[in-house]
Length: 228
Image (tube, rainbow, N blue to C red; front, side):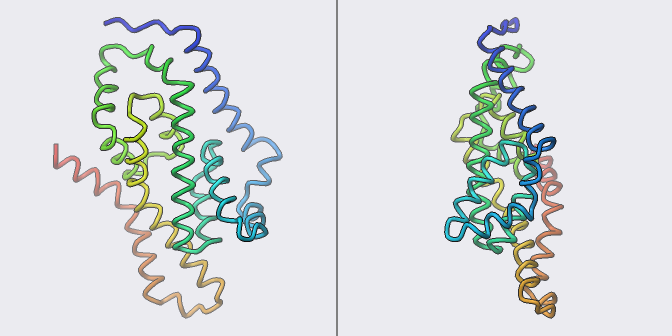
């Protein structure tokens, strides 16, 4: 089978997707807006939001990941402001909404053009992703595949939206909890001024979890390799 020729509509959408990505990176990194996206600036804004802070934070997270703001910055900010437990919840919700947004942007603007470029050799992988969408997404999330590029990239494939969301939701739980628990716990100790708590079980447990998180990708890859 020959590769289908891209139509003009697909090309225009692909150019819009490229313009969106480039524009987002330029906006965030090379304009005065960059000054409002620091941890201090966002923290001050959310601290003044009162009861609306969780809702504003979720919105900032969701939009931020679509604009290529580093997820580690947004996650650490959520843990520092809301603590290890509420921070985890708001981070997870924001990440889910942001991941869905990136996927839908990629699917709407880029899928048609990507499909037109797929020949026999790539089509079998595209079909396999559709058949095993949940497992594929879950695996990539567990091995910490870059978050935002994956959101847009999966939109270019045939993976079903429900499989993508389910795989993402389950796949980011462990890493998100470990990171927010670690940052949130240290923030609580810092805020209390009781440095003796640094040797408490909770702090030591959070450190163990944080160190363990770096080994998760290797563990997952080894398990997957043994199953093949």
